[in-house]
Length: 91
Image 1 (cartoon, helix red, strand yellow):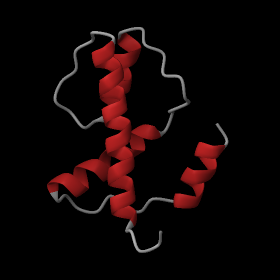
Image 2 (tube, helix red, strand yellow):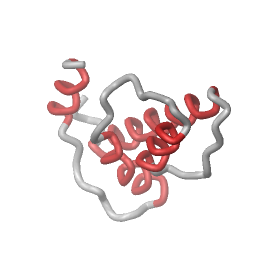
Image 3 (cartoon, one colour):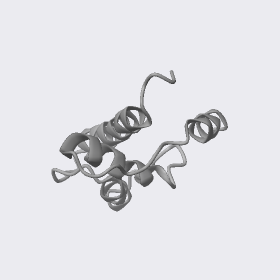
């Protein structure tokens, strides 16, 4: 949907990943701090012995998108929607 800005798409993608990782941690009984930092959450999963089933090697690039939209920080840039869609479908 071209009418929806890249910032909004990025924010919701970041939120989805953040909440999913927190749900996995909570389900495993692992604690986590108040954070929007996806890299921190991925590390906590690793530390708890939780394997992340989908390759998420660059998903932490979404962190600034969530923070910028939520807290009004400067724009983190744009989301390459075509690459994101292609990467998702290839898995």
